[in-house]
Image (tube, rainbow, N blue to C red; front, side, top):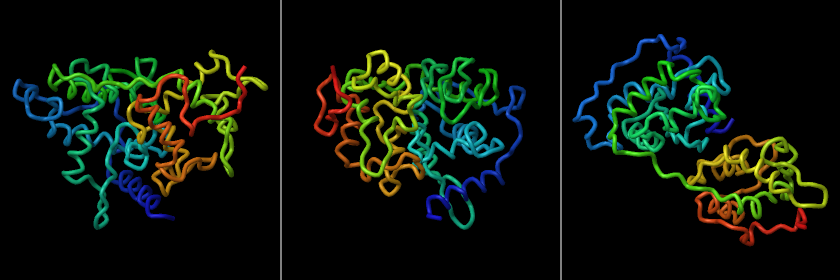
Length: 301
């Protein structure tokens, strides 16, 4: 077992042993956040209280939830540097049998978490929307649902902390990922595998890798459906935290440990991956494709 995998299991074991397994329902007691003019104008990221974050918000990310998959596992299982998930938590430090975040690491976590909050409109914060059930207004989240309603104690605690920030601080601007570039230059990747790798359509045909019609290109409707599915695997403006670019990347280059379809890229410098990164950063638009994304298959009418 390599070091990264061994570290993941150690972190899980320590979290399991040390973090309370109690059910976090809407009746649970919660810390009280004292909001004042001083705290709202304090010299911190978006006016957010760092001390309260470290004491009451950060522990949520390592809270054991009874299992090891999806909504049953702790946030750190996916949202660490290795997973390249948007939340961007720093990997826990291991020292003398202890697993923890150092003060410097907690400060970095704080900066990353602040990117996902909107004090001017707390309920629109990505930090709140991802773990919230879609039936309660949340967004799709591959890590599962932690909160079934906005009355959940964790949701209320995080929302109150966000609302205590600078009311003039807004959400970080979102980058728009261009549909036309996807349809013209990105979508053909799914049917053009590299050597020793399966085509994306082999496993993902029911989601973003919809097979094209026989001897023809995708219809615009098919491309729209594929784009809407793929967007959940993209963090606009952040290529390295986008699962779309992380899963097919070889682990030696920082990719995920597992990808059943094989590895498409063995370096972040691969021209194809760089072209896709430029698209995710919002820099590539329109139907003109760079050389790394020019394919003859499927044929266009």
